[in-house]
View 1 (tube, rainbow over the protein chains, first blue to last red):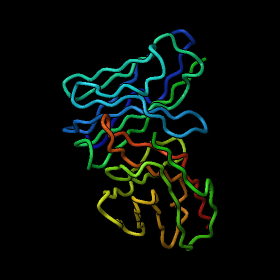
View 2: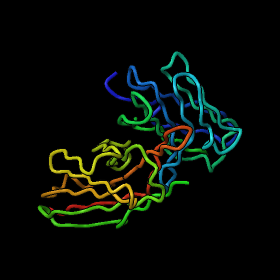
View 3: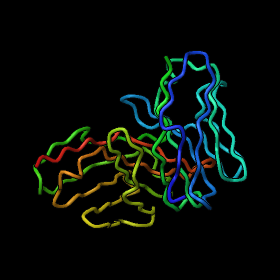
Length: 114
Length: 114
């Protein structure tokens, strides 16, 4: 596709349920990032993928959060047993390589836990 | 750990005015720095990428400068227009071992008054 695509755009879930958020990066981009933006806060790094491996998971806030990437393309962020504090906009970004190339962001998934 | 500060937090200017947005970061070991804009309820749009070896980068009415050693970047917007109203975010990309992650400030919210 032309840009980074995320789905769904909005998700409302009940506390305690599991959710899956999807990211389709720009074709050919090997690096993929997940960020979280809570109301009034800056963007918080969650996890980085290079290809299918995740050399940096240091931003995942708890073991309820996990992510995978398959075929060097689509990534899924899974939140288990959702809590109200998980409510935020989850943003995905991709870039052609790691260091010197531009990062492009998707439109985000707005997650609301009720 | 990289920390990014953006000043001012909010700025309101009349249409046509030139303006400067400031960004400072604590760790000068970066590969590059990217400026983004974020419209309400939207994802991030990349504006400019400036490499660590560069001093300036220009795109249309936008000019970004980088002084890596002092940990500062500025975004200059010439002849501002109402369509420039958005939140502007700067993000240095760290060169430490790991993920080459972008670290974000909280942004400057710009309002251009017609």
